[in-house]
Image 1 (cartoon, one colour):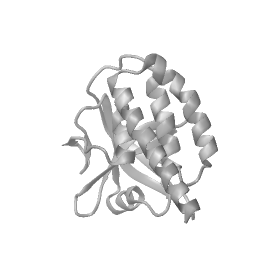
Image 2: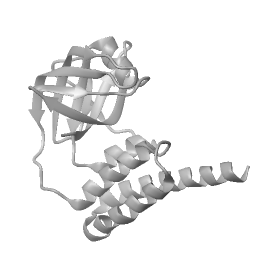
Image 3: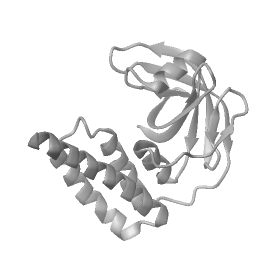
Length: 191
């Protein structure tokens, strides 16, 4: 099972990097499998730490992928790092094992501290639709546009039926990214 989270890491100089990330849990450890090369991978290997923020604000996922907004961060308790200031919960992680791979190494991290900051209000289908579109946007260069458009058409049903202001804003950022990608492809084909 993959959990969609926000991962924040810091580099050796202490500069924060925040990105959406699907993680797995296994035997009490968090497994992060970043592609090579990636800032997340470099930072975790350099510092041995990462922080998971668990949020239901899908704008954070969409904003990170589209460069729309910087989210407020707050220093963490037990590792040198940061979490989202407004998040439901966070987990501070320490690297305990690396399984190297040419494409996607697996980083095994132990939870050294976790805290609950707000209550979960329940599932919203529009939130799930935004997360699914965010995953597609993160793979725009790897998936055919026809597949992306088909998925968007289906996901739009949940947006139309259940979205609130946050979900509508996130959806608009992501659909703009898809439109911009499509326009760039069209321009390449004309050249």
